[in-house]
Length: 208
Image (cartoon, rainbow, N blue to C red; front, side, top):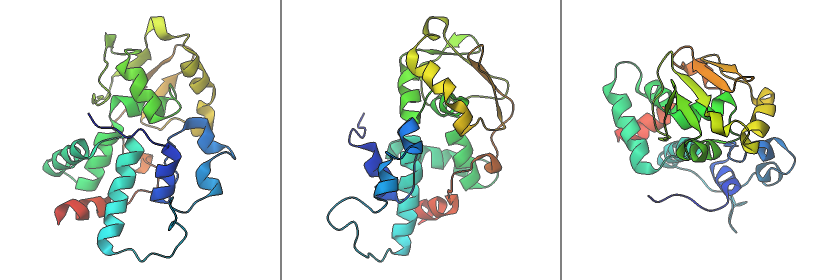
């Protein structure tokens, strides 16, 4: 499967927002977006008039890159959200939030979603006592996500848990840091997603 292997800070600059793709670096003065908030490239500092289509495209790309998902899979999430009852944009964000790699990140077991995705793929987590190594696995209310016994002393997980206070844990999740486990208390709601996302633009982009 194709995946982006270039500099992640370049993506933040391209989208004009912090996407928090590099863990602690995003909170430090080393953050590239803080130093150069304009798009990369020789024309990055020039004035460019963005069309209505461009605005909607950039919002879609920003959310897709934030969650680290390829275009085909992102479109599949949108189609599923569109078939569900309720507001399509909210449904889409809920589906993205319920991904296991995102839950691992939100609980503080990883410093970024990309790191969480790698840890999940390598089998370092259990869901309700069973090994799950699929990052796109959708968690349900009542599920318990915990670090596998053999993985509890992995430095990157310990380091991430030490920094979880800076980011916080959303209300729909509950973290037991001492036992390196967390539970899903409820489904995520739109109010729990604090990133400045305008999901209606994504709906409009795919509806054309």
